[in-house]
Structures are given as structure tokens and as C-alpha cells.
Length: 351
Ligand code: 1HN
Image (cartoon, rainbow, N blue to C red; front, side):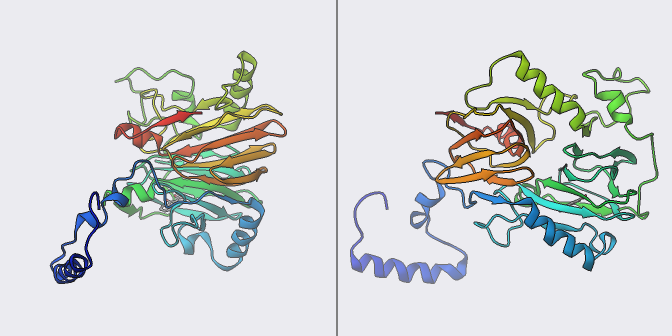
């Protein structure tokens, strides 16, 4: 209540009124207003770290019990402990660890949700997008933008594990999910593997309207290899001092418009040199962070977490973050920044 305490009599009569109106699907705003319109974000999501080896063991055990074809996608959801049952790692994003065993295929489908894959382990399995294979290596980023057909296969003799990042909670929020399966298990090949990287991956694009401009105009590129982004981080580090709040940071771009990789998801990588500590920073984009190389600490809100290779960390909206690097620390992160910026909601604050 904004002003004036309620008398006991008032409270009793109001309580009776609420009970009477509830069956008519009516509820008093004044009881909930302060919790709905908060002075700043109060995320139900918690700060959490998943150790890779722990998740990996459970995933491999699942691999003994169910095939990729049976599961459609054999994935363990990284479910935020603050939102049990929500299949969410932050309020707007989903994360999972997917296993494809040698010889397996994850059948072709397409859906409204945007997805990214960040490779944790294995080499030589592929994601095919609209029939074009991206052959994946550790720490490659591969996109399956909303509406595009995708299947996965592992022709190698080693298990392949990657992190799936999707905007499932966002699409659910808007009640805008459509999905369909292809009749065939794998999409028929349309072009040679790596074709999109050759056409769109060099900060150039085939002239619009030319026959070489093959991919959907708004989302032409879907493979961002480690072999390219890692040297780019080193080149940035050689070019100047790290940003005090971010370290050396590079955002993955959609070459169609120079903006975020997908409509709802942004992604970036960072290098924090050994001994470097960031100044405190907070932002409204709930973020999923993956440790690629090195060790360090993350202070996120009231929690301090050790960071080791392949750990995955959930950073809810508006938690203050300080990162420190014991050895050169390389991080990958994705968030809903792209979506929040479109809606005019994004804020950040450097301390
Ligand atoms: C999906 O399409 C994949 O294609 C993985 O690998 C996880 C989780 C929910 C909905 C779609 C994939 C998914 C998913």
C-alpha cells in the first residue's frame, strides 16, 4: 500500500472481497504492484556454476541408456536452481549440454527458436543448416537461426559434446513457437561444407541480387570457428590495453547488418590477461558464460566462484560482476542483450 495503514476491519472486508472476485478472474493490483514494478531488476534466477566434468558424467550415462534418434535431441538441461521446472538458465534463455555418440544422427527439424552451439569436446561432428554442413571443432560457435532446417551427425569415433543456447523462454513468453520435422532424417546436401564461410565469412558478401548470394538475406553466416575468433582476440590484445570493465572483448556479428548474431541472442568472447581484474559492472542482460581457457574467479553479486575450463556460469540480470584472471582467461558468453536492445530495455552500469 502506498499510503495509510489498513484497519483490521478494512483488511477483513477486503479479504472477503478478494475471495468473492477470484472466481470471476479478478484480482486487486494494489496487493502486488510493488512486486510487479520494481525499482530495479529482482531476478528469480540465481547465480550458478555447473562444473563440466559433473555434467559430462551424467550425459555419458544418459548416452548408455537412450540414443540420439530416440531422444530426438539427447540433452541435459542446465536448469537454473532459482526457477525449477522452467527449463531456463536465465529468465529469457535456455542452455543444455548435447551428446552425439559416434555414428549417431540427430534428425532434421526446424523451429521458431534461435539456437547456438558452442563446442565443448570432440572434433569432426557436424551441424547441417539448410543442408550445408559446418564441421565442428572445440570452441567453435555454430548458429541455427530460427526457421532454418538443422540436423546433426557424428561420423567420427569419439563422442561430441556441445552447449546448446536457445531463446526458448523468450519464444514461450510471446506464445510464438512453431516447429516441424523433415520427412527425411538428414536434410539432403545443398552445397559443400563450409560454403557460407567462403561466401560471407570475410567481412564481404556476394553482391545482393547476384546468383552467388545464396543464403537468407537476414542471416547468411552460421559458423564462427575458434581458429578465427581466438587469433582475433590475441590481435586485439596486441593492439591496446584491456577495457577496465570487460578486458579484451569481441562481439560476434551478423554480416547482414553488423548487429548481434541473431534477433534475440548476442554473443561475445573475452580475454583477461593473467593478473588482470575487471572493475565492477552490471547489466540487464541475463548471461551464460563458458570458460574456454585459463583459471580465475568470478564475484557475481554476493557469490564468489572459481573458474576452470568448460565451467558454465549463469549470471542473472543486474548482478554486479568482477572477474579476475589467475592465468590468461578466455571466456565465451551469450545473452539476451540483442532482444532487450530492440525493446528499449537494455541498461548497463560501470562501477
Ligand atoms: C534443438 O533444436 C536442439 O537442434 C537442441 O540440437 C536443443 C532444445 C529445445 C528445442 C529445440 C538441436 C533444443 C532444441
